[in-house]
Image (cartoon, rainbow, N blue to C red; front, side):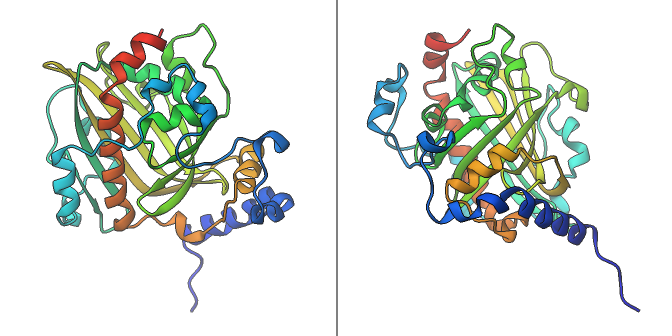
Length: 310
């Protein structure tokens, strides 16, 4: 007796069909990426361009990304967590409680059910939670801003709804919004759409002097959700600490942004089904990537915020 399709097969099949519907009319453009000026799409590029150096924040542009802190590099050099020590996604609101620490603050692993997990703790002298709320509302409007975060790996950024110039709270600029990014995680190019959600509505306790950036991670092209991320920023002596969490291979479907999917293909995308299955190698590289970008930006975020923040 044959078995019916699994949930994963249903999702992958639906994603493939929806992806074909979205990217089919522009697939031929993938072989020869168009420029942003001719298509209305931004461009993906490595490093900074001469025109970027004219930006008012150019003095914060570094040639290389600052290394991750020691706890991250030690975890990267070590083994993955045992499957039974990887927390469930359902525990994330208690994992990122306003006080206390969890059994795993920095590490990566995969549960027996296939869910992949990453945790990173970054100490950030002179930084506050308000600075990070501002950053998440400000950085994705253009690639040059996004590159400030990780100049080695960040290539492209755009927003579903550019709210950066609106006179609204910083949180309101990114919560309920989606950022579309191209970046390298280790050697693999990822094209992602991250939809930011209200953490309080999802059960997190967020005191006034803290923040939690909570998002659904998906593909920019295929209408497939890949997992969840959360970054908690809370005060410690001399500044703040960020406690980051990623729970991946928790898939679902979303309504695609047709314009952004078409632009992603024009940038030279390839819809690789293996990108939808995130293994231990990706988790290990994501841990290092997160440790690098958070440590790098924290080094000058106070000055950037003082000059450009609200």
